[in-house]
Length: 223
Ligand SMILES: [Fe+2]
Image 1 (spheres, rainbow, N blue to C red):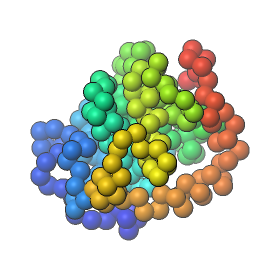
Image 2 (image 1 turned 60 degrees about the horizontal axis):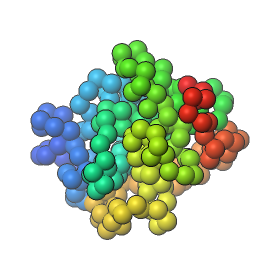
Image 3 (image 1 turned 60 degrees about the vertical axis):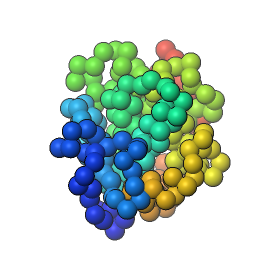
């Protein structure tokens, strides 16, 4: 666990054992939050474990990225009154970058490997093909350069929230910078995000760049 992962753990609203999972409205800058507090179904728990298996870390930089990205997606959806399947959105959030890591990688373009890893993680849990497809598409389409509202809402919510998370100075889709800076980035620290991203990019650029911004058309997915 990195130094950034230390800090007081919430003991009041949100989180397992408190009646409901953590939601974006619970985020306060003075209370450290963790991925486990988002979990309320077996599939979500399995998806988080799969992420931890891929990265080899608990509460590491990538896991914290997915937690922030999911909470941003929740806020984006609420602001626009967009319906979504919480379990699909959360599992896709946990797994959308998993293909960067050895246990989830086949050496192919990483968004395709993320999609394949999501499918083989969730398929044994009895998901319908429609829900699996949405989760797979959310992983595979998350670097698309144009809106994906014509696909299930979860796909575009992952794409937008990842943009806010990675490029907050350029793309916020109405998310206040003050909330990011004073609340979210304190509760789920970004420390180490850019060095880790640069290290991954240096190591894996050959399978990141090809196809990264031109995901396959629906029906032509690799997963
Ligand atoms: Fe991401």
